Length: 142
Length: 142
DNA sequence: ATGACTCGCAACTGTACTAGTTACGGGTCA
DNA sequence: TGACCCGTAACTAGTACAGTTGCGAGTCAT
Image (tube, rainbow over all chains, first blue to last red; front, side, top):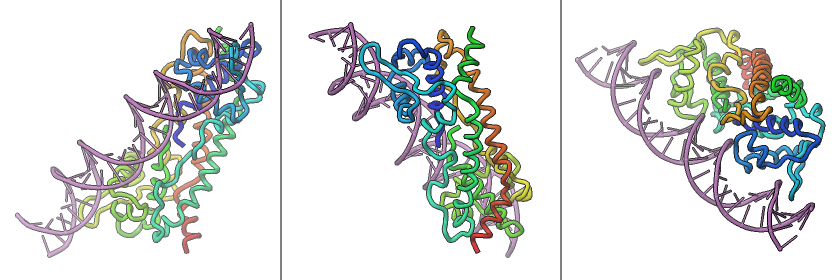
């Protein structure tokens, strides 16, 4: 994986949607104004979150984006999996030399440890929800 | 951070050095043969590991690279910190809108959670040593 | 001293990914 | 019908990484 700011922006957007839940749907242009970027960037990102069923969109006047689950039911782990696709630690670009005892076996050995590390990371991300962040934002922002 | 295959290659190289410890130092050309890449790529990577005092180099004929600590004293966490410099999850590229309550506060809220996630990851990486991998390689490769 | 050997490092290239931007098609609603 | 908004393709610019070449500098045996 080559982590991008997508994860950060996705959490920002979801927190913003939770902040405004109950009112009008938010347009990508409005969201882009909070994140300080381009509406198309936001729509591309939200398309990933929609695929994970975390948001839904509505066209036309008065349309925009809404959260689907309650904020307390969205964990950072779900967001992470929705927007970061690749491996946490990539293996070799080109395969190591199969005639070397280490080169021949290191990838199989590593992938197990990498998988375990990814699980440890996701276990931690699971502890925080969008609602947790919303509470922190509300506490500081007043 | 944009994780690269550097982490994988670094572990591969350290395991290889541990595999050959006690004999001649290994040249970057020999190591490159096992990893299947260019010697300069290996030297660049080993320069990072040397800065972390995990290896040392020796010029001239019969020179090359050696492990400094014992393999059982090198954890994947040390390797990770030696070769991957950036943040695990980058924050926004450009700062969010300070006039938005969420945009104004989300970064501070997130950096704490990111730090905690990084610690969880490193705690897991600390459980595995180069010697563990060497044993796995020896078990499979015979 | 000489020459083979090895690392150290700068410079350059190709590739890939991300973010940002423009443009336009298509569905929705008053 | 027209304003609104999403969906998506296409393009650009910036950045990071892997790979490669070239050359300087230190080391060792003879």
